Amino acid sequence: MRIWIDVEDFFVFAAKGGRRPTGIQRLAFELCQEMQRLDGDDRIGFVRHDRLRDGLGVVSWGNVAALFSGLTETQGPRPSAPAAGGGGLKDRLRSRFRPLVGRLPPDLVAPLVRMLKAQMEAMLAAAATARALLHLATGALRRRDDTRARGDVARFTAEARPGDMLFIPGAGFVHTEYPEFIARLRARQGLRVALLIYDIIPVRRPEFVGVAFSESFGGWLDGMLPLCDRLMAISQSAAGEATAHAAARGIALRDAILPIPIGTGFSAPPAPPATNPDLPAPGSYALFVSTVEPRKNHQLLFRVWRRLIETMPAGAVPTLVFAGKQGPLGEDMMQQLHGTGFLGGHIRMIDQPSDGDLTALYRGCLFTVFPSFYEGWGLPVSESLAFGKPCIISNATSLPEAGGNLARYFDPEDVPGATALIRAVLEDRDGLAAWTRRVETEFRPVSWQESARVVMEHLT
Image (tube, rainbow, N blue to C red):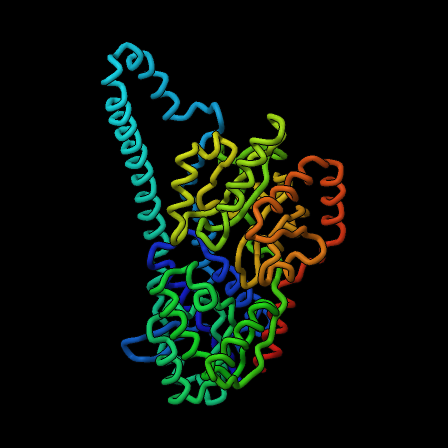
C-alpha cells in the first residue's frame, strides 16, 4: 500500500501571492517531511490536483520542499508603530508644520490640520503600497517555476492501486467542490481517504469567520467526514468537537477520530534576525504571536495594557509586541491601534515577521501571551515553551493541552482577571525568573518524527 499526500494547498497559496505560511501549512509541511524521511519514495508520494483531467498528478518532494523554503525565506516589509517619542516621518513632519500652524487664525487651524493629516496618511499609505507591490513581484518571480509544477497525472494513474491511501494533511477546505472531487477519485481508483482535522471553528463559532466561509466550510466538513476511512485531529479538543458535530448532523463516521501528538518548533534553520531594526530590545517586551483577527482576542490585551499603563508606575509596563499580519475581520482592531498611537507607543506591531525575527522575538521576550477564544491546538504556546519562555494564556478549547502545567491561565472573556494575572507577574520579577527556569528545565518538546510515526501507524 502506498500513501499519497495531497499538497495542492501549498501550491495554491504560493500562486496567489502568499507571503508567510499559515500555522496549518507549517504543521502539514513538518508532517510531510518526516513521513517522507520515514518511508521515502517507495511508499510516500505527493500529489496535486488536475481539475481539467479530473485527477491527481505526482509531484516530487523536491518541488514541495523548494516551494515551502521560498515561502519561509521571504523577507517582506515589516512596518511597526514607532515607540513613544520616536523620530518617525510623522514626528518630523509635525515638528516642521507646528510653528506655521501656531501663527494662523484659529478658524483655519482645524481644516488645515485635517488636510495635512490626510495628505500625510496618503503619502505613508502610498509608500507602504509600493513596498508591498515590490515584495509581491519579487516573490512571485522567485516562486513561479515551483508553482508551475503541475504534477504527472499519467504517473499517478499508472502507479496508484486500489487500497492506496490518500492523506489530506492541510487546508483542503479552501478548494471548491473538494468532497465531490475526492468521492470520484475514491470510486474510480479504489482509494481510501484519510483526513487531518485542525478545528471546526467556522461551524462552531461562525462569528469569527463570516457567513460565506462558515457555509462553505460546513459543506466541506459534512461532505468529507463520511468519505474518510481514517480520521485524525491535532488535539483532544478538536477530536471531541468534530465527533460531536458528526453525531449532531447524523453523519456515520467510518473511524473514531484519533488525536495525534503535535511536534514542537520547526525544522528549517531560521534566517539571521540582526537585519531587522524594528525588533525591540531584549527584555523590554511581552510577545503575542498571531494574525490580527477577532478570534485571537487582541482586543483583550489592548484593554489590559491600557489598564496597566493607567494603574502601574511609569516604566513598569513592558511594551506589548503583536507579531503577525492583519487577518480577516481585523480592521477594527487595527483602527483602534492607529487611533491611539498604538497606546502611545506601548504596543508595537511587527508585520509578517520572518522565521529569524520570530526566533529573536521569542528569545528576547519576558514572557508570551495568547488570549485566543478558540484554537485547534495553539502552536505559539508550544513554541514559547520550547524557547524557555513562560506563557500566560486563555483556558479555552485546546490551549490547556498545549500549555499543560507550565502555563498560567485566564478566561478570555475576563479582562479584570487577565489584568490581575499579568500585573502579578510584572510585579514579581523574581517569581517570573523562577517560572522561566522551570519552563527551561521541565518542558519536554514533542518531535515531528513522533507525530509522523503516529500518523503512519494509523494510516497503515
